[in-house]
Image (cartoon, rainbow, N blue to C red; front, top):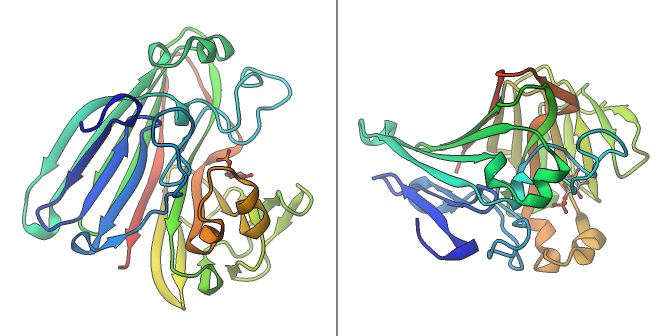
Length: 295
Ligand code: BG6
């Protein structure tokens, strides 16, 4: 662990130069470098607060136990947008690595959060007994992030979960997203109702905020200039949000900088946000993603 107070982070690298950086605050991955350490794959705002006072704008914030604004009623109704996991300090549980041949070595970092680790205010708002373990595994050209949610209390609870990944790209106008054709989505920009994507690819020429539901194929791919850039493979989750704030919303978002940073990022966020995941006493949910970088 390096740094102090709310800025503490864990960094790890492979002998071949690839690296990953994770803030304890939110267990937010803020850097993932592939290609021997030469290619940064994640976008982080220049105005991101990295002191543990508010969710980090960029990287891979973990959304739990509610996605988006809290619902009007129910157990998560007193929480804030995207829940408390991204603004709680997680515990570092340790590192394990495999050191096989240079090409197959990997390093895994584990982080934990439970009822005792969240603020008094959050405990009151969501009075349920839970345990999260979040594992971040770096390999030569992949990053795998998996969460387990355990119900440690006596009553059942419901949650939503999302990995709000900000991918770094060179030029949003040259980005296409494949793998969402014919899938139903809620369009949060247009009218908050359900549509079906008729085109095989998604392009960006304005604000995009879509919640794709129950996706049948496992991998959503990001291409730049027609060339594969990222393959995002869902692991035991079926939904994916695509988000780019575009000009006005980027400008209006205080911790989003520079203003034209929207050109260099695209959020592809995998998770379980279509309805709620229910866990009975003692039950465990596991889900996440495997991302391959082609650069
Ligand atoms: C996305 C939501 O997941 O997150 C958007 O679909 C939202 O509606 C975006 O604007 C950013 O949220 P926040 O709370 O980090 O500003």
